[in-house]
Image (cartoon, rainbow over all chains, first blue to last red):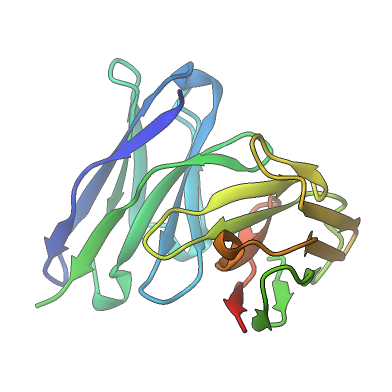
Length: 116
Length: 106
């Protein structure tokens, strides 16, 4: 069965960076794009960007350009999302999601807390 | 950027009643709209894609309709497990979500 499994909770100080992982299983890793979506506490869903696991090409939402980097490791079927220059507003649950015409499978999410 | 506006923000209904949720796009998105259900502490779950196609395992009481700018998610007869937050999403770059409709028990 398709699974996307996230790395664990992170607590970071303002100005630091965080790197979250999402390990895929149960399907051919290179056949589906992976997206990152975040959700601040009590708020809605916000798309951050996507990566093509086949060639590694990426597209980022303008809001995160220059601060986010998405990469993948095909040997372990894992995608990574690194966010730099963290501020308190980046406190959120970060989800990876597989896409076809929509997001058909989601990871359980990683809570990132940014606090001094 | 395409803005999706969901209405109402909150919908209060009783089990067994019919729920109608709306999503309006700021410009035409053809049928490229999906609906998700999210319960507290859980990731969103895909319900409907391409405006009207139920995802795998989704009960027949969920249906989607619309095209262009106006879309509707209908739950024909509410079950207790249906009370949650519902989001619509369009797939033109940049991908955007509606702000959500909270479906609560009356």
